Image 1 (cartoon, protein in one colour):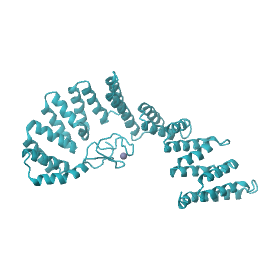
Image 2 (cartoon, helix red, strand yellow):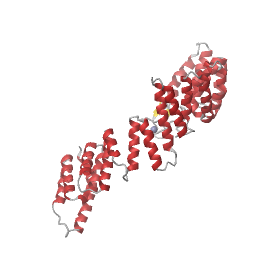
Image 3 (cartoon, protein in one colour):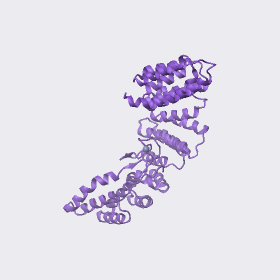
Image 4 (spheres, protein in one colour):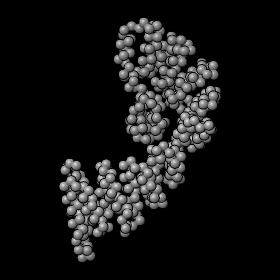
Length: 397
Ligand SMILES: [Zn+2]
């Protein structure tokens, strides 16, 4: 470890020593200045000589002598954790938590810090155990939040539903964030069931979708899943019915079902019926995915010229790089492959930029991905991805 970085740790300790010296001063008669300052100076000396483990031992020695210096140890422990030295933070906090003579509040504080150390170190089981032991304490709600985060990390959605429900009972949920998360957890279970092999997988998925809708009737994901479930049941008409509701209520989410919507209508033998509702959703929430899906459908149903005319009008109304790319591809198709060299050159120049524009961007942390996620892989927030690609981040829903 570099010498300079240790000064960062030393500065708060000097403050602590100053505070401690003042206390000693005030109680000179009650307790003569004996071995305690020695322990601290010894610890500081080790610290400055880049021997942090010996320093910890010396500081822990100090606690043994005078439990009133505990706050200093909490400061030391959280400094270690912030610096990513979780094993040292764990040692400090574990020692505090197990120390006899601590009052209940201090012991709970140490346990809460210890839980966070384990979490930071990736020791999820031990973190969970520490947070578990804080039920009923003044850290109960914060510990529950950490346990909820752990349940999501290990994708234990049942546990997540239970914990979020308990949190919602105990705390206020003004923005409805917990309610939306509970709906998402049910949707995760439904998605798992749909993708699984269990004989009752469709029934199970249906139950979870119903629970999600009950938790948050206006969330787009259960509506989307209801359509997918209908398709899995071989009921294309049912899928169309559910997705029609989604397109009306959440037009931006048309981007996620556009292809499935067109296919379901094709399966039903009435492809033309797919266009009005999808066009309407695209008008309300224009995006690259609905634009290309509509252009392809028009090309299939009415021919390349009709598709080209539609894309041209669309581009005049809302210029976009993916739209321009589609226009050039259609022009090339219309020329039966005999495209002029200019068009090909423009297409080549355009491709990387159009690709860049085709990203989903998290409205919270800015994480970019080609794929859509309900939970951001960067910041773990739910509903922070706009469903439309190539759109400026717009936050939740
Ligand atoms: Zn994010």
